[in-house]
Amino acid sequence: MKHETFPDRQRRRYPSEQQIARMLEIARRAGLDVAGFEVSAEGSIRILEARAMNAKPAAPTSDFDRYADQL
Image (cartoon, rainbow, N blue to C red; front, side, top):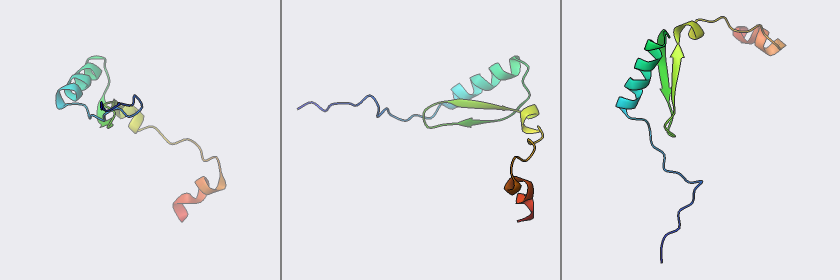
């Protein structure tokens, strides 16, 4: 009896170091100031830019957000 595979149960595979290095090089060539990166088990690579990391947080939208630092 042949084992049936299910399309929704894909094998998780982290990206290789070579793939990460290639994406970082592409981002730098595009003029991004790379501050870091994130990888997922599904194989996606997320490049984090320094300007986005230093951005000011949005204004608080609730009383909890406004006083969260005092807790």
